[in-house]
Image (cartoon, rainbow over all chains, first blue to last red):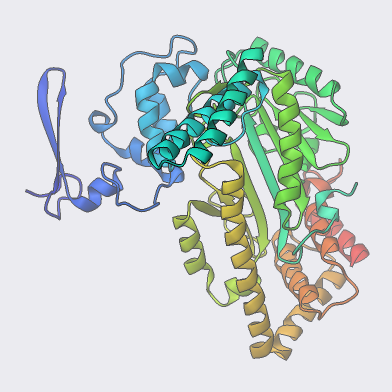
Length: 167
Length: 335
């Protein structure tokens, strides 16, 4: 079967979906599947400058299945977000959480923030993340029977959790 | 303190400027593309009140009051973006009196903080912007997300909200036709290269902007270290090729550079594009020690002071020919 995008190479990627109750299929060659962002070629090749154009160039039916509704806070619809890369307000990030996560994972190396936040809320998040990391290290230290390090880590966690309690 | 284009820093002969911007938004208010006039005024009032309490003096530039020429001057100095100059909602830029910081309110995001220094000054630039951001984060309620960090209007800025860009002068790399290979390698590292005037523009005067694309999943220091390593690599390549150029072309190169200087010092009519090309030669000549009585910062300063809006007066704003005459005069007086 030939690729339904370039019609020249053999299709290696098969995608089935249901729209309005009817079944549809799309068949792509490896190159087109990579180009359209369906599969990752395993290296750092994300390019935010192109991704929105590429999403836009896809036929409507094979974009991330778009919710038909709009953000209740700012009235931005998903189609606009996937086409332009712009959201309308903070609430869009919750309302379109799944779809936005999918876009971010295509254009960024990870979808988890590292780095500074600042402010009262930001500091709390920063502290919670630090504690989470320390707890993971604590588990590792215990597993490796490295009790000296575990004791240091436990004290650090306690101190940080104490700070949180005071505020 | 001197403005970035009248100053020099590390590797100034190759790196014209280091610029960092942070994109920030306030919780619960729609982003500028979706905000009402009332929302816009509210954001302005909140930011202005915070800045007033700050131990740093800013001058306010109201986009609804400023003349088009005044706005264009701020764009030419790279204190505001071209989009911001044509903003239709209430929006203001706050520029620090030491000229290193500009804060745009109601651009693409509620707040865009930008710091700029001459030369390769990533640490100095980051320290300053970080200080201002920390201060504002304590006064204002930033829109942040447990997983994604700073929320921004465009999904390409989410996370750190940080874009760092270096403006570089790379004549030898261009002359040896090495730019294509280098730039395509750079883009594989999650960085972008653009002409001086932004996306899609051809480079004028061998000037290129190199900036990061990654904003999420790496912290500020990692992003800065990654790009600075690449920029340092480009600097040593450019230096190596400049020496090679001198060895191979010697007198022919010197002749070209001195002719360019001669034209700048004597021309009576000078178009902007021609000026950029000639200034590029002269900058290279200074860097190679062929021209001794002109400094690199004079060249950068001319690039800005002789650009369109800066050279325009009320009489010449609609007269390109008169502008070219004024430009030639300014260049003769400077060099």
